[in-house]
Image (cartoon, rainbow, N blue to C red; front, side, top):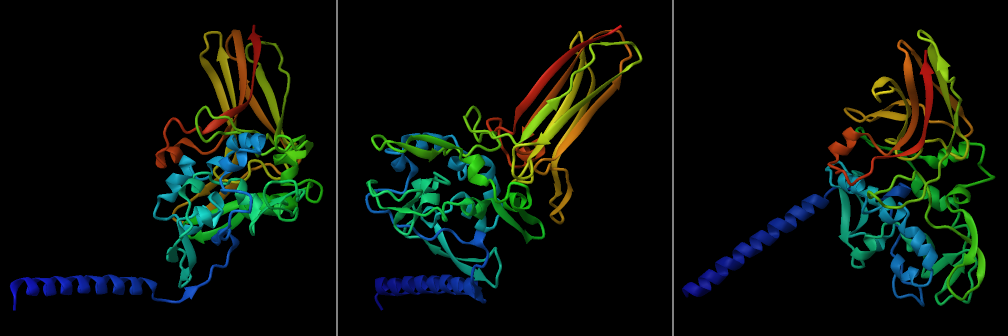
Length: 401
């Protein structure tokens, strides 16, 4: 046999064996019973065609006409739902299951793979299929206009006007608070060490505002303006979805909706040595229809008291914390929870004995936190990722004689 022919046959045999090994490995990976997806958070919004009259599903494309809406959305945390550094850090972990992306990039158009089911019901064995319509640029927009407004080849809106340059359908049932709750109410134990605890919808349903006010009432305040230039003014809603107010990027602008009202008391301006400074700071969940904090269980508030002398030296300090505390290993479980219910108020005391004469100042500082520093370090988040903002600060001057 010709040496060249023998070489080609041998090479072909090797290639065939390698293909068979790879094919067998794929078949072995797919063995087992394929179970369908069952939970709402397991399933992305099915592929959406671009409505007639539009050229793209991107928010930037919508913003060409809906200019104010687009500017507002750009300052929202929805716009950073995918690019958020904390989320991306969590996503890279081996323990991160496939379904987490469905709230951060809800449209199947934004997802690289289509999940067809689970092998033997195992969330870490999803049956994946390459998405032929994957749009990487659309993915970067996170929760964009189309996430809420595009379904079945049409733009879902509050009027269904025929004057729009694209196909528009009135569907207020779709655009109700149920759309918000589809992401903001995911509560499940995924694995023994992984729990999803977003219960804002349940908190609202159990509270005093249910049936009277909803997510849209507070987080999409009503206004009156042109929806797009030349169409005349009408009822509209803001689209920056104000919430915690903690930006995703240092220096970025984002809307804040503070559920808490703060009621500081006045302080006596003159004390004697040996007397105690007694101060009470009252916090009330006066504005939120859900508990505060809500959503991510790692969020919390710190109420801090700092007593300083005339040299600005710290004489006494006290801290109070509002929020949940969790243990994640070896089992995920909630340890404590002192979040405030709607309408609930709580008083936080500061007390200390004054031992020396002089001039003093008492500072009351309230900070709202996305997570603690240990979690930020664990997730390798740098200094450009904001962990908290200050929502209240007041200083009192007094003397001791």
